Amino acid sequence: MTDSPEILSSPAPASRTPNRRSARILDAASRCFSQKGFQGTTIIDVAHAAGVSRPLVYKYFGDKDGLIDSVLETTFSDWLSLNRGALSDQPDPEGVSAGGALENKFESAIDFVRQRPIFRAILQQDPQIVMRGHLEGLRRCRDVSAESTRAILRAGITSGEFRSDLDEESATASLEMILFAVLERALGIRPELALEASLERATIGLLLAGLISTGSAS
Image (cartoon, rainbow, N blue to C red; front, side, top):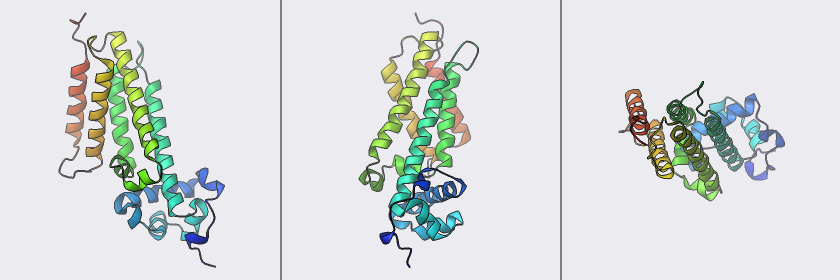
């Protein structure tokens, strides 16, 4: 009996409950899709990269379509969790400052995409993502990122740490534009524009310098 994906049924329910093997397959698939694209990646490529058999990939994910869907769903879910964490990491008198919360957000996002190379295809809006109905997931990722940035800005303005003359919506949009440009550099989308550690620190430092109140604003 062949293990061709055309005759296999939909992914087993176990594929929606990650275990060690399925997580390893998802990680391998993320790397393969990032390196070779959706069309250029085969189930054999993913199985070899994960160190498992091809039938096991089919057992968990059904076929290549089920595999890319699971990779994207998992990545989007992790991104939402990251930003919900940023929302809960709010400044308070005895804890992290607004500037510290914003710095943590940028650093966490950079680490996140570097550990998930599939984000290269996501940020470039690979046609397979759009065609398979994941554009809404990408929009939600951008929305929740903006929500966490807006909350940090609002807290900083309210506490007096950030300038009182900041327009919350414009500042949020500007910070998000810079964040995603930095993430593209972190992913090496343009190899000639690498994100060196010194550049990362300088960028965050300049952002904070533009936000911090000098004490002269009323």
